[in-house]
Image 1: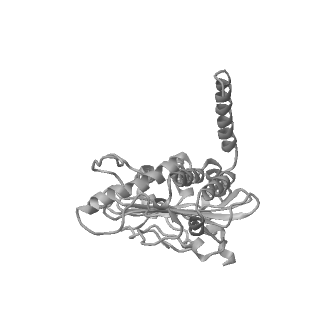
Image 2: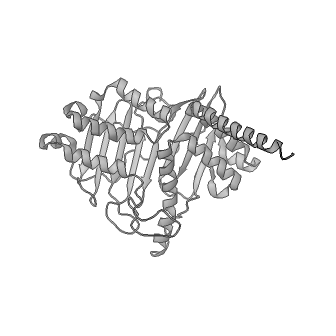
Image 3: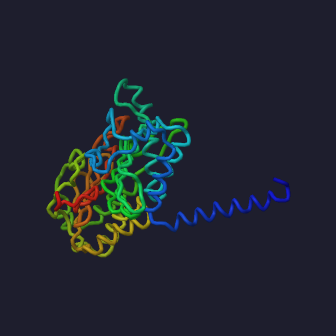
Length: 348
């Protein structure tokens, strides 16, 4: 290529990249996911593809958990080369908002801190920021239905896409240990890192904003439960309406509760977030309840449940972190009482 032609070529390349980025932003999340999943699978060897791609109807599609398991379905990041990892993280990006993606990557990086803290005690589970697994269920196709799981310790993301639309996005599980990084480790999340800060701080803000009468309705137990309910189960837990009704809150408290719900919904891309919030609106905020258990201050076990006909949010912080700090180990989840994994409860 001669020197005169090069500036024109470079300008065309910039234009093509920019146009491509604009085009991707204009697509739905489902369409972006389909393209990214195809690109990811295309980087894999035949042996890796056999591990990472499963039939849509396999029972493993609805098997999920966030504990540090020895074995999981799918292909782990550690077993990918650089190009494959890049494609895998591009796929992860399509499933989450920027805020959600940053949380997911930081949750992975916290494994490095757990590894360092665990050294002082000796033994324990494998802690590895590359020990996260990708599984695609069914061939990604613009006209078909396929699923995706991205999972490892403290992270479980589960999706179903049909005709380029996300029709299921739960369970969505995010956790943090420690909830606040209190030590400095070179090359790791810095001191003060707090992955799920809004999930916790707005919860405290809301419970403290309630009147004594409202608190008597909202607080359902003096002690927080040990963990979220139905962990690892394909069906979400079944609840009766419990706690303080949205209709029993004043306008400022209602706004606070909506902000808290939006924190969870906002972990997903804008269109999927909007779908979640629209479903709540359609079912009616008057059918939403807020329940609390345990302490209303940090350092002591606390828990809340927010639920309505179309969603269940659970947050629990009762365990010590790996350095022994009390109530510094968060588990949080969004589930769909109508049925996770695009499997309606009524059809089961």
